[in-house]
Length: 288
Length: 159
Ligand SMILES: Cc1cc2nc3c(=O)[nH]c(=O)nc-3n(C[C@H](O)[C@H](O)[C@H](O)COP(=O)(O)OP(=O)(O)OC[C@H]3O[C@@H](n4cnc5c(N)ncnc54)[C@H](O)[C@@H]3O)c2cc1C
Ligand code: FES
Image (cartoon, rainbow over all chains, first blue to last red; front, side, top):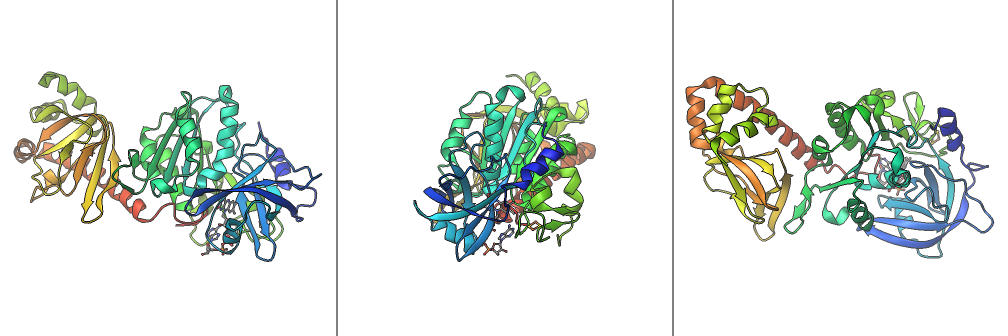
């Protein structure tokens, strides 16, 4: 079981948490029209702190700025660091311009992870919306690597269009497994798309899981998480079994500056992964 | 499949959950078993809405044909879902196409038959209206979320 103490320890990150290490871009892989994955290798002689599923790094582009991006790779693979990013503004655009050989400053890992150990013995339902599949992917890798410790594993994933679906080869591989249920849906599709159309919340009512023994990990825009939680509660899952990953603008990422404050919490340190019942009150306040 | 076989299917269907035996029997009198092969249409835009369907197994796409762009899928319906409510309101015409995405088995309920029964038995009409209103609300909610462009913002964007 990952105790609260261990979570905080994990949040502490590297020795000097404010100093970025210059990683080398090994490859930039296009995932969709606006999303890409950077494969990064650490500088020679530098031993990165292992990350836990759901944690994030601060990515620094010299002369441009810094932003928080979750780690999207396999926590068991300590060779290459993966970050999957959607282009929305200045820093993410600069990251998108990186090619093999470019340098990116990395500090972290930070934040409280998905409590994958606490979910052992339960059915695990992952609900991802859009880019939200990236922060969930390490947790999916983890539960599949420890398959016998879990009940059913269900992934419900929603994207805007078939072209926006991330990690297609991986989804195909997971779909073909007999010990995992994968459902993908898109908001809009032209004729020819043979998959589901509709929002991801539509998938919840039919998803195969035991409501009394289920842990749900949800990641996506907050509006999507809000409606997803309602549907999952509607299926009878206890709110203590529901986890969400929240995002607020970040600066220090170490719990000092207060930039990411949400009610009594600092999202960078106490989150980004929170148990739903602890944050629901703050999620409902519009200004926060 | 005989009419007697349809009764337990309707009775156990979540849509008719809590309906009296008598009302279910009336519905069975308007029901028949049908199937659509992949690519076949259950209903077409503008045509008379003289039935609605309960999907037993399969997948059905609700589509709209956009001139010069072809057909766009708005929603996929699956086992247990209901297709169609245009039969409830004049002018009783379909507002969309419903096409089987794969071999789909369904129960079709005859609209004329049902409307007549509802006129004669307002309790039955009320029971059906309650269920259709709840389903329409659910679909409206889902459509609103689709319009919101749910996944457009950065992962943390608030709605
Ligand atoms: C813990 C954490 C993990 C994250 N993980 C990922 C990830 O794995 N992949 C990914 O693509 N993104 C992730 N993000 C979001 C990412 O940090 C932002 O998209 C990024 O900071 C944008 O920086 P920018 O300079 O490109 O955009 P800016 O120029 O800062 O902003 C461009 C536009 O996007 C809006 N915007 C930017 N960031 C946010 C935000 N976080 N919330 C709401 N609106 C925002 C701004 O209001 C503005 O309109 C994460 C954020 C946090 C806090
Ligand atoms: S980003 Fe500084 S306290 Fe969270």
